Image (cartoon, rainbow, N blue to C red; front, side, top):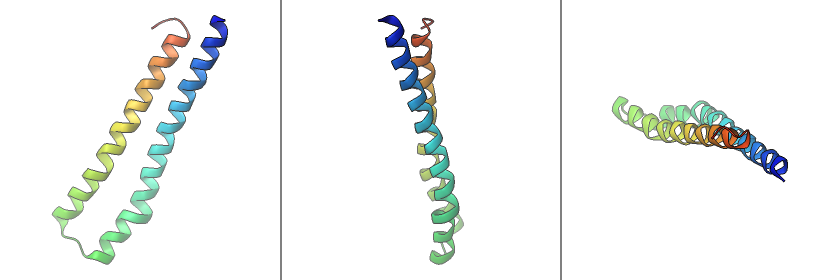
Length: 82
């Protein structure tokens, strides 16, 4: 039963890693395709551009890092170290 629990926990850890990867990938695509094009068409000021990028990228990075942290903690529990 413990082995089954460990396998399930490792699967959950892999799911968290996948979510983190998708967050980074989606954020990169959003920056390239949506945000930068919006700056050109809207003629935004430099301060507005910096604020928009910060308020978009920082939450993505924080969420992805928390997801990686959760994956690490779950993996540690799965192998009996946490």
